[in-house]
Image (cartoon, rainbow over all chains, first blue to last red):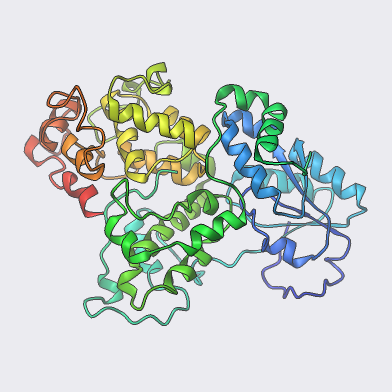
Length: 179
Length: 282
């Protein structure tokens, strides 16, 4: 699996991106999906992961929501074993490369390895929420936020409040959204 | 699979026929529409200042973007930009950005620790009980919303029918399941994941662990006064249990009933003395 981070992806597909298909998964269902943008016009596929849906006991409303998202994307929709379906689709199009976007899910990594063993997989990065790649202490949100707050406002030139210095910003002791 | 449908009803019928197990588990369909166009309407409606003031109230000005964020229909960065465009100073957008950061934080934990992080206790329980004291299945009355507690049953019905619950209602319901019913957080978390349109293993499970106390310094509990305040009395006003429901009492009384003393706090009055302010502060 290669990470596309250091490469510039322009509108004109380079050699590597020609003959590619795009695997769209459930963590990036927007038209501006970076993998779709990296290979304009390339065949794209989404696969409902039957085993995962069973594991999670997924209910109808979630599937309808996902389906509505998919209908706004230029993707072929399939179901079954994700790696098998994506590989069959890639072979059907004579693809020499598969592009996708990142996900933290272990299942994504496992599927990615299976794809990459047969056809090279390129994970096109998303723009990170924090423009920072240094150390973050993840033991508690408050520790994370101590550093993250310097980057969390992006490039915005908003003035600081009079009572606010970045190191003093308050952190609530809560658990964030359940779900 | 098919892409052309005459209307939403045709789409729903098709998906139900293709995934009969999912429909059998629960055949409700959410009023919320999937897709970028629907997400952009929500994005346009963000009001960061009102969000900061009212987000803890069930009728508050929350963004309802969670399902779109979960599935990357919009990105955290896009929501941030939309929010910042509507304010003139950081203070007006800080609360919303901090909530976006919570999602980033949970995703980083998931990336670093995988399934072990989200399905295993991150820390010991701080309730005086051990993992063996918590039931490992969710009883039918909870699953079906027939607990007899009008507030909880209303939240459960909303979860099943819409695939959405306000964050505060999620916390109350999770606390009820784990602490009042002494059920392990895992079956609770799995139940939410089956229903929530925004169900994300990292955000969901780590938040359940936060309520349980396996990812926080103390268990989260609430009392009826807190629930009444943030629901504007919607459930309590007409509740036949008013005055003697399971959630009556001060925080100290409730903790005394629910938990065993922990080794480090001999004075029960000291236990989680600030907990009652937690939700109010948020």
